[in-house]
Image (spheres, rainbow, N blue to C red):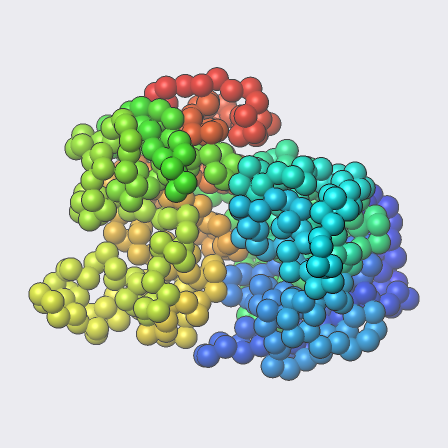
Length: 526
């Protein structure tokens, strides 16, 4: 058997039985309490290709790659590198076999330089470190692969896109042959995505290979030569991307037809629900994060906030919901002054919040799914009498939400930390949308969700809007904002630098504003 693929390198490459796989995973099985995350999964990766790995939340994509990267050990199955069976017990073992991973949450030390981060953890360093040689090598790699970063810059000084380049440089410095990229475009502007395509073109053209984990089907078609689809922990298909389509891949992932555009009626906004005037706030380092932000969100409309991570979006959401102190300016919800209010007051005023940090802020890992779902409702008489909780009422409530939001969990009493990332997000969505009574502040509500769940969440946001809810949607996914929002405001360096009605918004124009180009600093975004 022999077939040809045409990928991002722009050249035909031969893949099949006549070519020995660079890497093979055979019969990989990984179990957790009550869950089989990988069920006898096979995967092949060839030199000079990009393989996309797709699947619903909980399908086992991250688990499979964590087995390959040495973070988990498989219960059954084998891994072969260049035809030889290998044992991978740690990320160090993976590095020594030429396998490295760029995680979605970067593994960098912010107070160290680029060069120091790149060599951190290397085993064969001499007692006297030759940082000059390290910097020269990084400059060579930067020129070779289009990854130019100042080796002397501290990580905290770099943009998110530049930090991702450092993560890739770490792997190339270690001379890896297999790069695993976990949701690599989630925090990039459209222009930075194009830059990543160019980087991968050079890397793959140099004979290396990459596994690309993403939930964005358009990017699968753009980046990958082949695509492997997981469903319920099993490998259900592997396809050449040039011989498939987003519709076909979506059907393989979720087992049904998926609508890629949700039905959106015309916006009929009512009175102002959220009013933010000249808001100023500091970030966690005590540096200015909000620099005079003003905006209005009306009943029955969705206002999207676009911007690259780290430009004040998180701080804006936290000030509105009472989780961060404002240093100046005002916040009003339904004409009630809420500036620097306590979070409980915001909750009682009907403000719901889907936070950016689902683990650290959105959920309590050692509590059950049922307890997490009841965190905003446990004061109700159905769940408690005074200080005494009623577990049976909480369990019934949780089971309704688990069913309604398709949360994959062995049972309602399972500790939430054992859920997959997408099901963690679904748990937060179920709780917050149920508790919302007027204003929903949604920060990356579909991050990490598969196409089926993303479709459902976006439809739910529009349903909330149509019921008269004011929705502030913060997202780095321009497709999501253009599809769901009625207006888009762009944030850059703590300011709103432009606002557009969605019907008039140009993708390239918004992307340039996200990068700080073509700005037109605004006050009130109405």
